[in-house]
Amino acid sequence: MTADVRRRLRPPLTEGYVGNAIILTVAVAKMAEVVDDIPAARIRAAIMKLNDDYIGSALDFLEMQEDQRRLSRSAGNFSATDLSVTSWMQLPFYDVDFGWGPAEFMGAAAFYYARQCCVMNTPDGGVKY
Image (cartoon, rainbow, N blue to C red):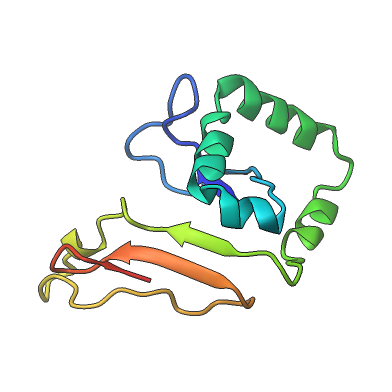
């Protein structure tokens, strides 16, 4: 999973920061555990581990790599059981106005892999995916 770390860094990134500030984390479970347990609890626990020390350790690891491009080549290798869910719930897409009024629709342009999902708000306050 990727997680936004803008507010998890100490000091946090500024409100006007532009660009990605993400880190990868995982929540692992066997199929029986997913059926019998609550997957959201595992996901939440993995995200809660993302503190300043964890993020600093990940940055140290990246700095030690001779060729960071090798890491990104394997990032998109989803297995047949992987699922990628992105949340854009906190992004204010419908507050943007380029001069011709607020947006009527916002959506992801394309997904490059199967089993990808993007969760976002609708203009009326609902949720779409």
